[in-house]
Image 1 (cartoon, rainbow, N blue to C red):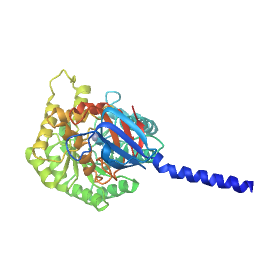
Image 2: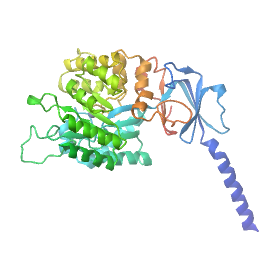
Image 3: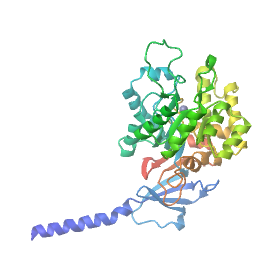
Image 4: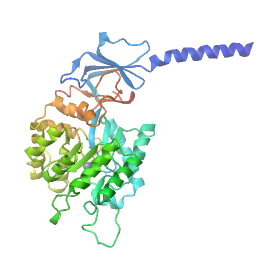
Length: 429
Ligand SMILES: [Zn+2]
């Protein structure tokens, strides 16, 4: 009898626990304003309700029914936005003024690079970037597959990752070798080197099989006579690469900094072009017409000019390379190309991703558009607009808050006060 009563009490206890659980998992966020990404302006007095990792409701406080027992998080003076997205990162690299790219690839063991990448992932998430497209491990093989899994499993904190694994380059075109090193030693490669249509297709399938979400290809590189930037793959190779990727359901990202490289990549059917500094007016028009996204990576240029060309931010005149990248950005805007936020972070410090947004605004992009480039527009480029990138019921609860209003002052994105990914709070006031 006594056992029965205890059993009954335990049953009642567990019933009451389970009954209160859904409410206790509800979180009500109370910022000063909400910027949903559906328009350009922010909404004063709006709140957001989150449950089980998803956004349940958003709107004026009076319109949202809050379950009893919901946790309330006040965000005074702040604006809540969708979690930010950087479409061009390298978590397995660190700034080149600390260690040159060559030395990172040649001298740093992969386990060392992976341990550092875990720190980079945490710093990125804490900076309000809840999603990255990480475009190549730069000699660290398939390490990004494990990184993505460790983040998804909750083993380490980090942004949601879309990865490109080893990336694909034409034989002899990419670093660290063969230029500048003796020709009788085998150097580790910064990417997978291939030649010929069959081998290009095999590389796509190999990387897809290992877990690549995107295929990254180098359509040009600094391997021309005298080290000038020059196209790499033939049109037939590029076309075969894109076809093999698309058949497998994977989009293609092309590194291209010359006009000719961009042309070949566009004609082959790639989905995004990275850098594009030398792009002509005609080429950006073609990108617009074909629906190819542009990722400007302005901060990468500023960084390398600072490290290697005596550029002093805030003091020096823009260098020729910087002027070229700024011209490309303006041309892309004038042509109406879809511009996604992508910084090439790794060249500079992980967690400083917001620098790219500040650059885009500095070059004339209104602050709300820069925010769109890092939220809903970026999600569309990832083909994940139904999953995240806006604040709307049903989407994943990737939410960040900044002091003041970033849709008025983009500089606020450098100072997040609140970070939530998939409904889990990582930073709060
Ligand atoms: Zn890159």
